[in-house]
Length: 458
Image (cartoon, rainbow, N blue to C red; front, side):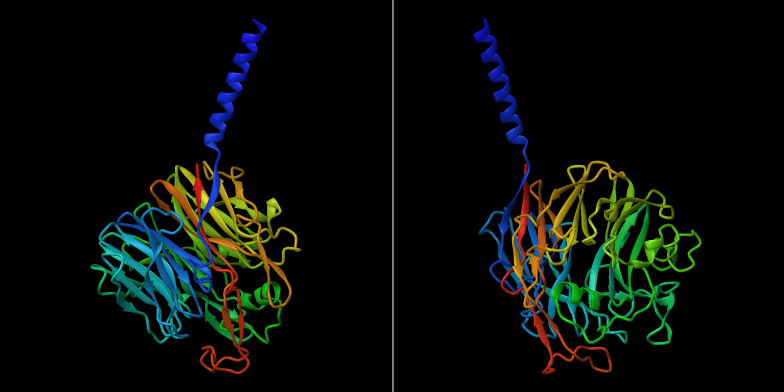
């Protein structure tokens, strides 16, 4: 009898071990080294279109690219778009948007004016909009369908909104009031300057369109000295103004109400500074998502105090994740969010010398509810724990952040970012445009690293 009982216990233990083994989750790498081009520093965006997963890259040295796969398997990726190699071409594909299965749109970063590209088959791409305005808006970071229009948020020197009924003809929306109506005092310029430089995110929530802005702030000096390890003579194109992000909403895309920002009537303040004293360091909203019938947004914070907030009505916001409270002060961005299998997944940008406290590289946090205290970390070390040494001798995590998420065949994919290969000139032209041909320019390189794609295996 004892032997029978022992055998039964062993059988039960075996069954449990097998079941737990089958349910174990881990991350598997499916693309590396920038899809074979190590100058592809960011897997900047993802979208699923006609049964294939598309990835747009940041490549400041050779021009942005778009890759796709029908299976997501290693070796299955093919390049379907490449920008011409020029400092004045599309340096990256910053956003991909699938308008059902009718068309796929690619929004770019371009120093001569951002572009919108369109394809109906995933291979043949047509430029349908080039944003060249008096404000020199160089990037389009977001797109969404709202009612009968597609909307795209642009910026660089002033937040602007474009829309189209057919995806081919795009027009600037003369919003009332203008997103550029918020002004803050810049002590460096000794003048009031436009606070909102770009629309960073767009989201549809409770039959209204929400726009989340980016602001002027001289963060690049600090980042360059902290990460790249060299001294910047002066800030590049960002002013040293005390601005913070704003949130606007509209029922028709033309008439807008400010729900977070300078003198908003709901008492939120710029960057939610009236709710949280650290809010004035919230420069931008880097991600927004509707999850469980609530609107979530994730911030970038100059001091590494990035947070996630949510609202059920669009005006009253509560904090659900504060990385500083968790001792994670190296998470500078809530870079992307996605809903997958009824859970909220959050990718962060975690950067700095690995000797600094809390620096681990890319992280992914997950919550089944989105409630405060419910988030746990799935990725602690940039997926593989690898690092590299930059030209200043600083050892940096290889994968500094999770920049994109995508879903294919009920599988979650994550795209990483590495330290970008960027040209940093010592001087700028009077118009604020980089003097790319200056003898004093530098290239800060992650060129031998390249972005990666990982997928969650369940």
